[in-house]
Image (cartoon, rainbow, N blue to C red):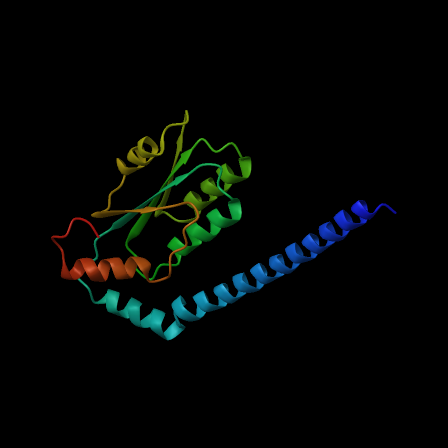
Length: 178
């Protein structure tokens, strides 16, 4: 054997082992983060019910419109994002999705399914491709909410995120930006 080839092969194998170990460590940290996030931010059933009961007795429940731009979105992440909106304890919201010419048929089908499954979800298919602000402004024109929030196609909201916005606004009704 040639000594240089053997040394290169040895270095390559060592680097491969380090990369595998690093990947396993990243997976472990991701699992740890997911568990930490659930423990820190997930609402218990009792908390969820308490928040909903508080909302039942309120006279002021403004509609909060959430705007989201999509383009070539990862279908699984997009589903998680929309589910995180649908699962809000605050009931008076609407979601306007401006799709900026996604070419993936599964994405378009999923967006149509979202709109068909919940009357609070609306989808606007934009053609041709525009810059993000033009697409979001087109969706904004249709909003009926008293307040507007922006959401990215891969954001995940905690169940009480919109409730917390409402609670802040309740004490600061003249505030225009949160």
